[in-house]
Length: 401
Image (tube, rainbow, N blue to C red):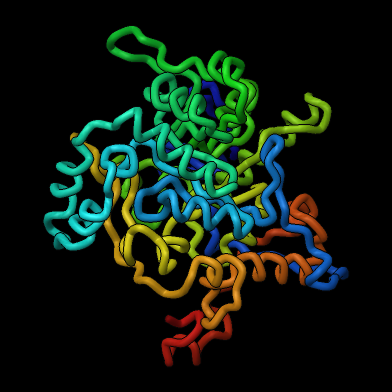
């Protein structure tokens, strides 16, 4: 029998039991769902995958994660020209060091037993506000949208410094974001609603996975919300902290909040950006179908030959001086950023031509735009990855790699 429980102000129906004293519910990840084609198809060229964040329009709904292994000034410019958007980490190596060449060399050259200690040392150097402004200006000089990320406690300092330098979009990001925060000092933390109303640029906030939290965040005036806790390839929050919700369910729950908000506000709601857990183009297609307006990805773009991580990828919380919650993984350098985003693809595993794959999926499903893609049928299908793939698995080809 279903039981409704209240957790942090959220009422959720639990229809399963872990044990007699702990009601629960089932959640789903991308590998457990599939998209169902209907009676309508259309030509690939008719599919519109553009998305608008406030007054900024992207021709492809892909944001690059604010990770030092993924985005530097060069990548931000290149990604913007290719139709997406790179988000620069304003508390990473780019703003701690004028010349980052030797810093990156040290990070990628250390062994797997010492990289956390090495990174803790390198990231202990203070952030310089002068570099915050300089990096923003360097991105703007390339003629693209300048987007950058800060943690909530740095929004009033580095965030405002970046805005004064010409920043177009500010991302305020932490592992888990909510409106209520209780501190030992009595400080309530960043007043998000007040902050959003005081700046003249769109604010993106995250991360969250819960319906009520998402709805509360939408009511602060943010332009978009990042959805996802712990699914990233280099993130270890689920192992260290034990928290997270599988992405298909997290997106769908937040999409319900967006629908409710839109009904109460003239049909408009902040964008939902699925953040983390997407490795292939199929994952991106499923994220949109579950309710996301766009995606933020890290490891798929860290493979680009131009990526600053040089074939390695690490989480934002890896260098934490107290409790690291990320690791450094080797993803390799494959092809150019342009090929990864817009093709042509030279492999069959869904890691290249991400925009082309999204359009092809939409054309097969009969969705002319991203809003229609969110209306396609999604089924629970745990066997979809292995069904009929005996030869690929045996020969380690395609989906059997």
